[in-house]
Image 1 (cartoon, one colour):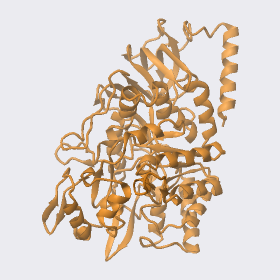
Image 2 (tube, rainbow, N blue to C red):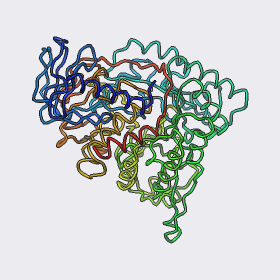
Image 3 (cartoon, one colour):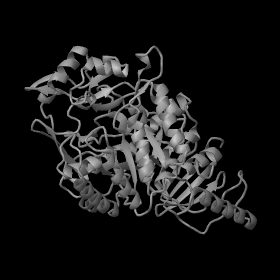
Image 4 (spheres, rainbow, N blue to C red):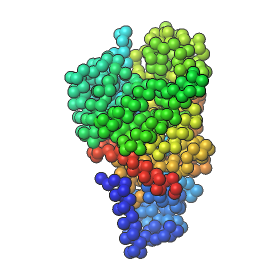
Length: 578
């Protein structure tokens, strides 16, 4: 496997050889003047082709055969072959497909129902590859004793990961999917109760299960430290070592959100608790596992984002294989039961700690007690209602039957926090999609939040074009090439000959997210994305599925490089100054 430096050197040599032989021409001439390919499967004509790795940004025609990019011919030259499908991309950007580093599945017991609805939803946002199993929750599910005779159960916790992957192997998807192995799922298989610490024997058993899953193709370990704080740092480090030993990675939802208490201390900065970020860094440092710190802006509250980003960036600059991702929205979805630490923290204290206002919180579902709806979906909280819900949370009908028993929309993400995080090249995009349910009337995916339809269209439309938080090149790099390099997806995240034809065609002047957080808006698809191409087949055309489902399970067979240093070098050389 080439490092970025070796790869760029190799590409440079090829270009020099081509120039000497007369095959490669200058920037204003065709990249290839002739070809012996003949007919191909798909031709994308006269689009603005952008490839962050090579620095290519030119009007060109792209020819695709058997799911692979065969030729890139600079406009106004035309590809001499023919194709059954020809797309006129004039006025549009032809970009590498978007790579979503943080997602969740639908949590159904049947494998196809668990994965395919999420795949179907995410592809409308240009996502051609997504990494599931995050926040400590393997796609197979969990069953955890949360006390008082209640169990939190989703999916099929008894199904082995190897069986799940084997079942998924031949299921057609709308984009490519891979998964991590969750530490909470591993804990549940040990019969550990919520908040119960692991003993040495249980740690060894979890390590053995994780090793089997890594050998079967898991991308690595996911950690949901906040969702079950009984997980010890010792166990997490030991599991991370196993992941690294078998070529995998790790991702962590940190143990606590951080807060800056300066609003309580007359403007004096005091970030608390710093352990949340330091624990993530220590796991990476000790185990040497490539580690993604998940949805950083979600977990850096009350003006603590500057400290969190600086601390993580210092670790990156010291050579750790650290990266991160963010959602990029001002809303997040979480669980009232979790945010109040199982209902133990009084709501006024939670408001004061985070410098929140109660009207920033909304019910994300109907809350029912004794057959009566006590709060309706999209209803804005009042202090009286929030106090009542905290006291009666365990009486909610269905409590203990899902990971989001009391889901709530939280409008607590200042745009300044997102704009700050987007400045860092090692920050990727993860929509944190919760996996949609299925509308019983239409059979279509019904998102439980709009995030599955908004992350990348919002990055390019809202944050790049409207807010100027980053350039078009930086946004495409962050959405595709950077995570591909870090994950070791050598043929994805690129528009280059010989690479996978996972491509998004969008209008840079109109691309925008449209799904919202109020009733009647959550299903709205993005504007401005004309085509999503997966493995050389058009899956989405003008916001409609074509019926093609060429996406497949991706089993990891390589060592994940986690080359954050290479991402920084490429950013400095090709992306920051294209």
